[in-house]
Length: 261
Ligand code: COA
Image 1 (tube, protein in one colour):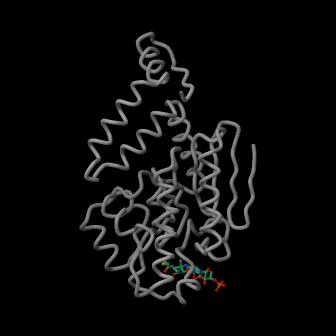
Image 2: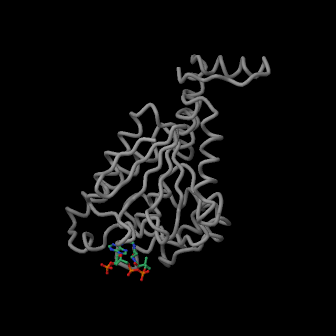
Image 3: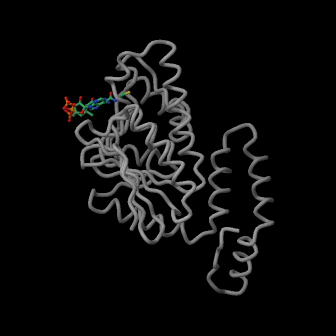
């Protein structure tokens, strides 16, 4: 088990290659201030460059919140110029989450509002605890989601449901999030971590290069070049040792030994 401690983030990696990144400001319901964003950016770089990490879990400290949004104290003083800078910065960091080469599972353990919902949506898979409440309440602050929420929510739940959530600003409960496809499972707080680790374990059985390519290809879906990008990534994988090993292992009725090459 290795541990990396930031001021507002805890990053822990177990011996199997599952890392857990915890946003750690429980007294402010893990709200994303400038320090959390910077540390998240640094942590994402470390996760992607650390060969010991195979899958990342992101969650919030405490039992009440995943992340209750951008820090409203900081939002309060924004003007046109600083607002543009903040949205661009948040988008860039959440893009790094979405485009991570390693699979990322969000464990949405309570409030996931505004920037919290946007962070969860940037992850590749979302698992919610029964007390989760997910929503984009920015219009209630006279704003709109600025860290990618207006783009990612329609892709996940469809335009009509996304419009309803964004225009009312009302969060939805875990069951409704499951029904609309925003999360893929709902579990008790006690079970959620184990479930996410099982998912991570199932993912880690597969070739790392194929996982990275799958993330890139799925992320390209819905974009103009999605099909073309999928074909290019598919063809590139055909040149890898993992591809030869994976297909050979199947034909030889044995488990594949992937090397990430
Ligand atoms: N930004 C800054 N501080 C926040 C915050 C946010 N997004 N969300 C919660 N906090 C702080 C509160 O100010 C409070 O701090 P204090 O103890 O110093 O007063 C602390 O976290 C606990 O929150 P509190 O409101 O007392 O908890 P609650 O259980 O009564 O309510 C929420 C929980 C999530 C309903 C409520 O905190 C809330 O509405 N937060 C804002 C959600 C939001 O609009 N997010 C989108 C921002 S774009």
